[in-house]
Image (cartoon, rainbow, N blue to C red; front, side, top):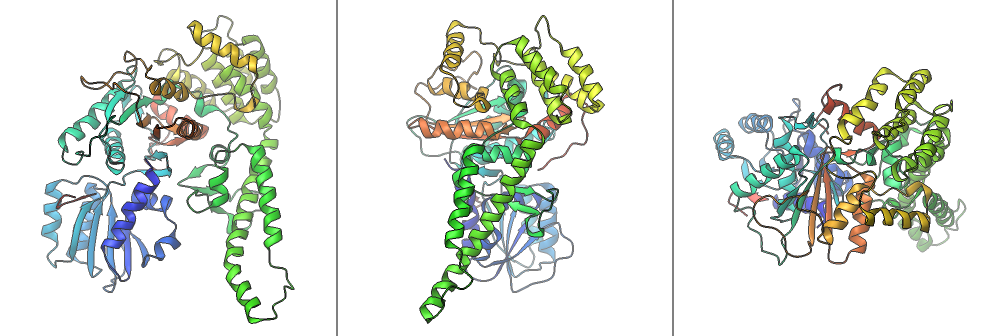
Length: 568
């Protein structure tokens, strides 16, 4: 179950099917992101694709010597663009691939437009999602809900994205959903409807234990996306923002021109792949080792180049150096900037209090620590508001809650009205009234004992005590203890055996901390394979946007972010 590999294989197949010769890849805004996350431009160039164009770009040249590979979402706009394209073709031949199911009537419209008979084939290849990591996918959608209901235009897109993941992984699953969330039930029914309607597509070889799709709602755990992170990928997203594997470093003081935007992709950056899930301290050590390694291998200015073989060896090695020097400078810059932000915003101190709010149950200590930090002039507005939100969620119903005075403290600090409104919005979005789980304060004796022992053993790292709610949910699911009363099956049947292939989808967005949880479960639970997806991958900033859009005080809504038709 590897979503990155699934998308890569689709794209390779598209390019290979068109045969030898020079090609252009025609995409739309979304498929451009889908492709760029799994392939670099240079990798695709090696496959004789010399041009990348957008189907909606008006001023493309006629290039009859090129074959066109079209990879498009099956939207009305794209079909219309294709019809116009086929009426006046700019390329010699067209291989058309849709990233999802397309209707017969639209195929007919395309066939009628193809008067010059330039279309060689039309197929469906189900890469309708962003494969972020091998076990993590996103649909890049922001603002998916209105209150506790779906934003009407988004439900069909999420259904398409999720069914395309199932088709790409060749899974026809049983479905469980979070009962406390009407949106989860609606999505479960919508996915089931597609599976029933397109039953031929989902006719995969039966496995002994059927796969399972588990649909959850972000509002059940609003704490995880509010915490500062300390593992590499999660930290980069939290502090710098990762968008389709790209980081904008243009605001970094004294940044050089070629490092204003960098790409971090585990597929073709070995250092990043090895350090994705390591904590900040370990990354510092590994960067130092990388630097030392580079110094050793770096060609000395006066390296002896006496014989032809010396020169050949130097030339053979040089591209490797060039690549390595790019990797070194990129990671040194990124880690350097993370380090600057950690000390400038005093994030170690902030994070310690966040972790206490998320994991401990000591109100008097929590309120003192939050107050103390709010009075620190170096605390950024974002971090101040985040601490108050965590306090509000944690001690929402506490008899001696000091929330009103913390809100006054925010005003004195000069926090904007929008930021202050967010505190109330977060409680409305993910407070006690909404949650179906006991995210906070475990009630049963077993859970309390577990907490007690955890406290007794001491925690290896004070900054990473927190485990997302997803960890417990998956742990219970794998052990067969996840309650049907809270997570019912859709339809009459249920799973008798321990699940093996699990696809988890979080409406309202997943986080890199949850991706780390899934990565660790995959490593430590033999025979269990888990893939995590979400409508988006959040950091605090994007999560609060989501909350504001949902609760209705938000800014603009932004969306963002194969079956052969002789069926294969």
